[in-house]
Length: 254
Image (tube, rainbow, N blue to C red; front, side):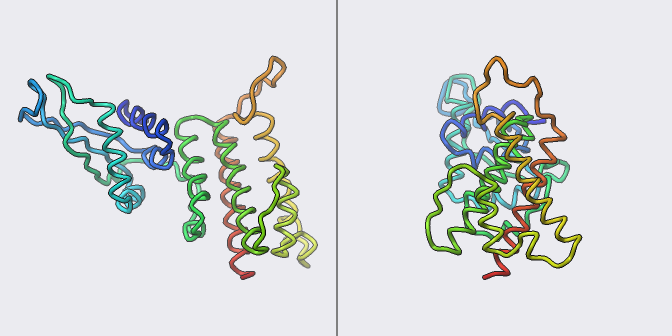
């Protein structure tokens, strides 16, 4: 469970349009280390804002540019503005903590190698939304992840902009034809079933997002069904697995 300062920090970063940094801190915890030394204001105390994260997340934080870390520091100052008789933040420090759990539901080792940053943003958002119990939002980002990898493949292979009309199944059919991964391209009966299942999964994730996620407004006749955590985790897992498979198939075809 996030502490109050991390929640506030994430809200500030989201407001500033830095959802990538906000998602990175989804599972982090914070500690305010106040010294006994007075600062520049009346009885203000020079303090350090410590952020502890899982070692895997810490490795990503270590890669942040000075500008990104300055963005986080500025956000912390929004939480602890300079006032009399209050903590005066002079620095933000980062530490790994092995006891912190992460919500990386599926390892995305293959997708980590892709250079298209938008795909990495969707992966982080999927995990962040589930951590914050925003299951509707996680479904939206799960679909967007599949859309992103499909568009990446189509436009990279054809070197032309694809006019996407929102029909994900139609887009996936184009991708499967380009990569020759349609059910009809396999001679193995069991593999045919698996490849057919991908169509069903994509159609399911797409339909769940259109019908129940936060992508549309709610009218008085909207279904009472609320997406549950287990269904959100299942959908995000499947979206990541399919995206990994598509990327590996794309690499093999190059």
